[in-house]
Image 1 (tube, rainbow over the protein chains, first blue to last red):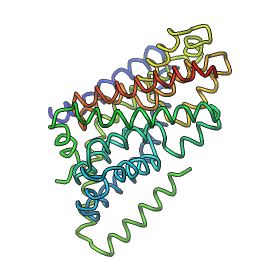
Image 2 (tube, rainbow over the protein chains, first blue to last red; image 1 turned 90 degrees about the vertical axis):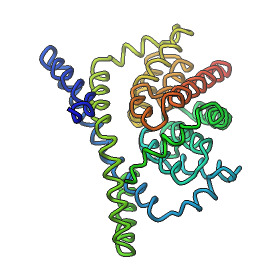
Image 3 (spheres, chains in turn cyan, red; image 1 turned 45 degrees about the horizontal axis):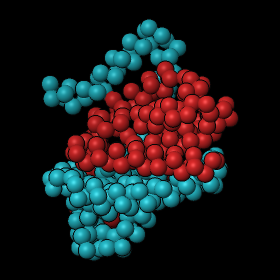
Image 4 (cartoon, helix red, strand yellow; image 1 turned 90 degrees about the horizontal axis):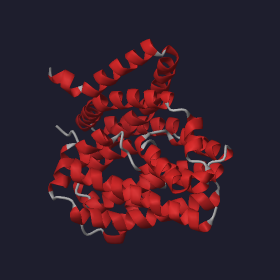
Length: 176
Length: 159
């Protein structure tokens, strides 16, 4: 029963897909193909990132993270958050486990949120892609607006969320 | 692509870690496994949902919805579709360029792209687990606001 509850979305959408396939085989087939392609993409990027997070946990001391991204890290913390976000690989949800790891090692929430923002909008590999399809000016405006808004927004959000937020984030790290 | 490099780097680091300290390496592996199983249940549902959504929604229809005459409504449409969908970047940018080719306006496409990359309505069940309700909602609103500012700048610049 517990397992069914955990996989409720998976079961629900499997049934939907089955229904779609029976009612409209052509669309059902193409939906399954798109899902398979996405699953392959996720399986190429997620495992190595999770392994990196695991290695980071056992080898990087808490003090180091606190020094570089903790409460008193100041501008240096933001620079590290920016570099981490810019080097990103993969879709945004891959950043959530990384955020949990950073939080559990004592990184400041504003720095983590800035990292997530940069990951979403200004990751380097995607930037080159954006320039070639959308042009330099479009990309430049997109990234600049993103950096300014996320910089300000990270500190505002840090102020207004409940204090339990960081505990929730830390608990997701899966250390036990 | 960058992914094979990522795998090689991680494999190298794992090997190095294994030679230095087996117990620690085992701990790291267990942690990765735990996180993976944490994410898996939501990811399977997510991937199935997005597959169906993308198969059923006709790109040409989106293109028409955010056409050059569509104005503010087209921007809103682009923002909403971008917020809900999750499309890998290397699919999304060619798609967006295709929208422009069939006559979509730059501000509308800007709203679509910016929301697509940062707002995650379909990944919200996952984000909730990590950030809780309040931060998930606020983070997504911040990203939506950022997308709107981006659209306004694009509009004002008249690209």
